[in-house]
Length: 172
Image (cartoon, rainbow, N blue to C red; front, top):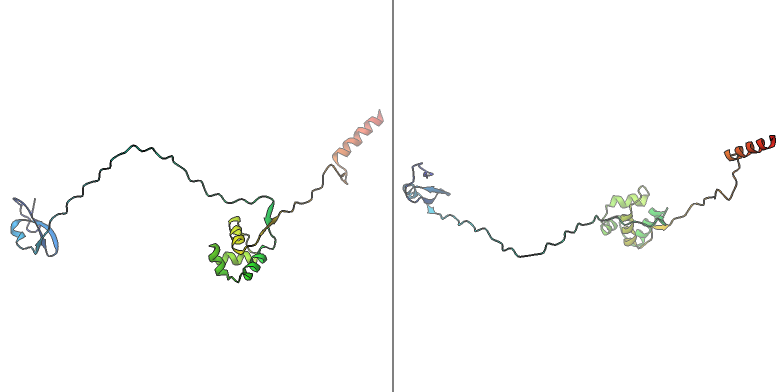
């Protein structure tokens, strides 16, 4: 081992000295120049764990948080924006207050109220809960005419086939 100050070979035990604030390992001659001495910190003993017989816990995979589904019998109200604005004003809430309450951006609320945006199901549920209103209405099923109940007005391929069959029978 060499002295960190003078570079000589150290015989015997090295001196751990503090010279000008730096901790150094030096020879006994250079150790006389030091302002103090230091001791190396003992190395921490690595902890040993005692292994006990534990049963392995079954690994549970967290399921993705599924978006709540709306029954197909409900659809958003056509006047959704007006309903949200009216309910917000009745509760005397500002856009900022409502945004904080449902944890959504103020710009999103303004777009919904102006009708520029249709909210997703999660936002609709938050709005319904916060404003205590219903934004979904029962879906109206379009009236479909039964094809069997009424006869078509124009000539169809079936009519042409029946006409040809009748003509062939008449010629015989």
